[in-house]
Image (cartoon, rainbow over all chains, first blue to last red; front, side, top):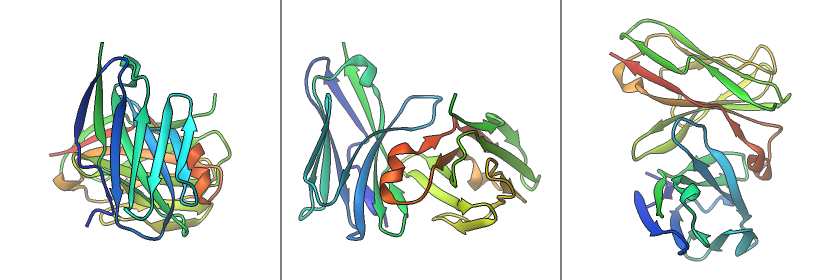
Length: 111
Length: 116
């Protein structure tokens, strides 16, 4: 049973528009969430995080929203750039330090 | 330069032939992990180590062994590889435990393993 779900395997967006990547989770023990970005032939790199006591965290063009009652989070990228084309992984961390990743969403930003 | 290195980057082997994938970090991190990435399943944790001589199972430990004799090294051992272990493997390290420390999780470049 997947505790972290990313139901869109892929997403295409025009350059300059908003990209919205969604993530749903089932584990109520998660108290911290992260987004990682992965380019081909490289390891994932940290992008942005949010604590479960917050509902929004912003870092430049990237904003993560958390809706705890719906067990849903989303990553907004505004404006999208071609260099944002990558696979994005959502992850949840439980208080006992267990990190669970979602299956990833492949984002293509079209120039 | 702060980094996690893995070797080899690519490996094709046959069923049953023991292999080791090495992982080394130069950041004096306490916490190290091994993940495998499979299509549709994302990254799944195989084993992790909170410090030297302290290791524990992740979500998919079957068929794998690890050791942590030195802080910088965390090799992944497949005693008798099988085709279902064909995957992309990542080693990662964090300075210490705690949820926010994952903001600083460094991943290696990956090892593409094929077991025939």
